[in-house]
Length: 313
Image 1 (cartoon, rainbow, N blue to C red):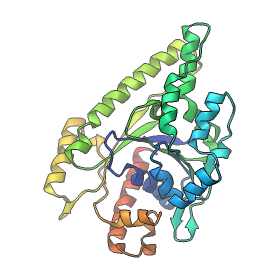
Image 2 (image 1 turned 90 degrees about the horizontal axis):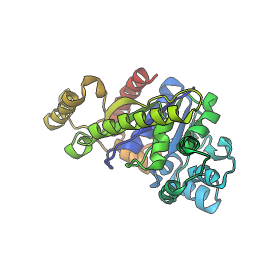
Image 3 (image 1 turned 120 degrees about the vertical axis):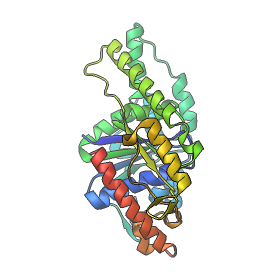
Image 4 (image 1 turned 135 degrees about the horizontal axis):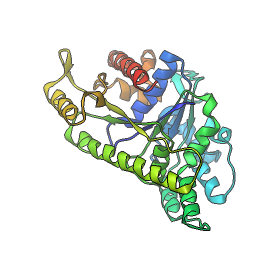
């Protein structure tokens, strides 16, 4: 069974999507792991980064091939969808002229925002309240069911979540073994992390109760906190500069040392330059500029990936 991880922060602009892509790339390159990426955000940024904006537009709008939206549409239509119909294989760019053979992706769609409202309105009548509870669990299990159907094909599933807790995002949490919070060392990026943890504790408690009440076989497995990974850290000397170090230490005092990844990603234009070319920063030799910064950031990401493996391995 793969380890399933939701990447979430209620604050945008923290590098969540680029970190998700680089975790997948690093796990594939350094540890030969098989990865499935799922882009849950209607902004489709992970989809753009993974295969290129032009290729995404051709796939989704010109050729009307399946995306994550297709999976939810099948639920509304009471039809079946095969995971193989929506998973893109050997399309995630690894370097110039090369794709990953062990990183696959389910693309997002801009209409996922509307689908969330449609999900909220979808109520299926049962013979009693217990059966209706089963239907609610079925609704929140849409993503889990797709992942379960290909569980033998992957070691990790990384889900890039939008910065909200709507029903589509809750479907990711329900499917996940862990949630990981990317952050940058500033007040707005970190102030809500304790609230995310509180929300997830309540989420687990609610679905534990619902599962038990529904009479479904087995049990609900809690989605565990995998830790906070800091992005865009400014360094001075051998570590984060004073202001960033203070914010990181404050969060350690609030949540405990173990809540924070010891390794982080530095600030710099290597990652952004690579993103402009729809490449991971590990392909720094293929970049037209910022190769030195890209090389440095790639080394930091190597350490983050290794720690990710040790925490969620």
